[in-house]
Length: 512
Image (cartoon, rainbow, N blue to C red; front, top):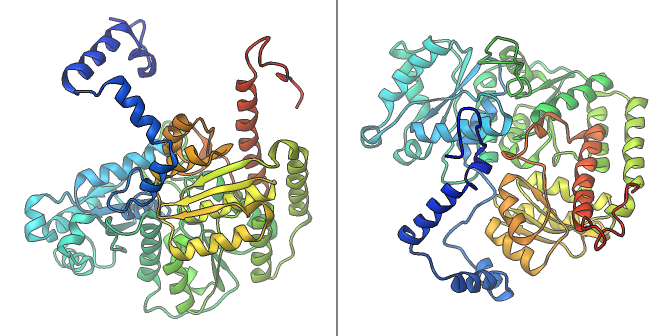
């Protein structure tokens, strides 16, 4: 065998060994009934044509590799941003295992969540007993200060009423009468993770704010939104706000929860917005969201409570950061410090330094609606062209908003917006209308390999690269990280395309 205790191979190299190549070939020939090599090649070539593209784009009955996740994932992430909060998902264990693994694989940190472990009998008779027992176990075993309840498909299909179930659990003594248990209905068969995030944040605020009298103050609430880069971004946001002298509450801060140190102590809970601050956030002057499309219900609720509201589209680059900083300064009644002016100027200078390599580059961008909007705007600031903008969870309203953004710059003139399309659609688009660069998450690597388009990983989930989420993308400093990331991919491709000595290496230079 190729492996031994003294020589342990990574799976990437292990399965290239002769024994495994032979085994896989036998499996293919005897069990998979493969088509001939010629037939496979012919079909593969057909999928690269305009004719196939038109059929593919007309597809409605099935989604193939959608660029989104389901609502409960967003709710679990939202709950992780509050002090000592355990996420309790009312549904099957398998669903919760998916949410936990998705988050832990991206952040490289444990992602705690529990399940009511509904099975066939609960699907028939309802999950009340599962809720009663599950809340009791969660409270006793994990010592949370709050339990945030969300749902999966099973609980939603049979119509379990979370409010009454939680009250029944209190009556049965599973949890103390005054213990905090906010909840949100998050059916996984509609919407996406951004909707689940929104309704869970709203559910938490409703739990603390409903029935309370508001005593307005000058604080600003900030809702970051569903963000796989929250570790770097939230810390950068707090640095900017502290520099400006703004009094604020960051509602749902998961930066410490997903970045715990290795110092000999296990932290099931770390950081997060305190429950006291969450309750007091009712009195804030305004609530500002960094991502409009995953905070619409939350902002509507804040407005109902008498707060000013504002939302942005994931502030990347110069213009978007300008708007965020100016809006917060206006709301808080503070001046923008000279230090931020310097940071802005450095980002502008860096973009100008690299203009020769950025101008005219074409991009395909996919991901959540706010992310696609933000990257397209940044790309146009650098002189790039966002040729394809795709959001599986994008709506008609988002599509119209994107069209307005693209129409505001000559670099967006030839761009196309694809709401509701998936990554198999994107594959067809890249074969028929190729671009220079692909921007999204790890799931794009298959499209990247098929089409030969270099992939820039900038959004959740990123499984096949490590620690990207620890560095900010938002703000002027984040803009420098973003710029460097894009340029590294451009330069790496230049090197790959010119690395054959004596043939393609005429410009394989050190000075660029």
